[in-house]
Image (cartoon, rainbow, N blue to C red; front, side, top):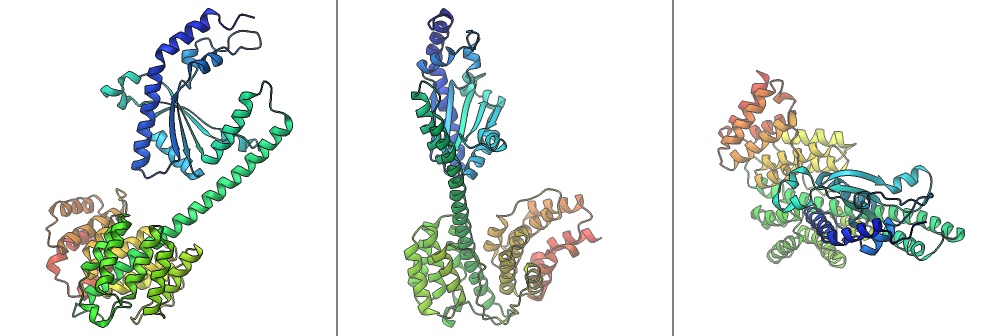
Length: 496
């Protein structure tokens, strides 16, 4: 058998030693790109490490031989694909999937292997990781700073922190052994791998519950603030039904809805620290207003201050012990459960909702009759029942528009995606036009876009659109037709 130091090995090792800085720079560049994108996307990770293969490790690898004594690699500098490598460690299996999506969108993928999936297909437990071989895309290689990496390949591994711990320990034992792992140790490794897979699933379940709870509480806080803003606006309208903000002293009904907008905008933007400051100011102005304590409790919970949240809930309970919304949020925070919020209302509303369809029907009816707060509550309840979220969010935006809360309407619309060529796209653009005109803007470009959309889809029928309920409600509220007539005139072309 030829000696390990034969010329071909020495030559390749020397060449790699000279070129290694290029592979180090390449792996560092791939790591930098991934960190930037993952942070932009809000994807949490435990670590992202980059490395170029060590020279002695490269030498060991290319010295491997086939059974006939020939070297395993004919052209090791081309065949060894992990000369540049990046390893991404995340916390849960879903984050592995999210990172993989980013990798596939960001790089030109030459090869992919999901080791865990392959083992699952064979009913085996063991090493789990997703492996990629990637290159920079042609578009990126056109840029001057990336041209030096043309033709280079980087291996990327993605795994959870538990999968990484298992792999590192298993690798350490195999690396130090001169023979295969003993059967009993191998059996224990397989058993442990199964337990780690279960633990990963449980951690994922915990994270899913936490996200669902925080999302529900944030949504509840935004809904409460919006409902309160609508209530203030409607109390000023001579045409409005008699109503009063939930839990607010009668003397406070003259306050402007603007005091809610700051906290609401910060909540929608995820700026919970700023939302807390807004609630602190409101409570300083109105210390006996229990809904402000409930709102601040939700913000404190979102900031991780559970004890502070419960203290505010206790204060709200002292001020208004009969409000069932207090018990709901208290149960959510104490038990970590997500439940449909029971909203206390001082309006005369039929609360016997059978399901989301009935809630939507009643919300649309309230909208068409000019009752914005009642409509908003109905759409929120339908959302709690699991009704199509796009329709409930659009409904809440219409309820805000009806009440004159144009900032709230715009905020809800900001959560909806446009799907070109659909009636919903026309609805979204039309409602944006209405909001602009209610704010005193002409909305020229949007109006032209709306007209183009309606002309391109002549089958659009306002009579089948949810906007028909808003139109009826605006008419009932004696809203000046000069503000909105142009938008509805365009929409009614679909019937012509």
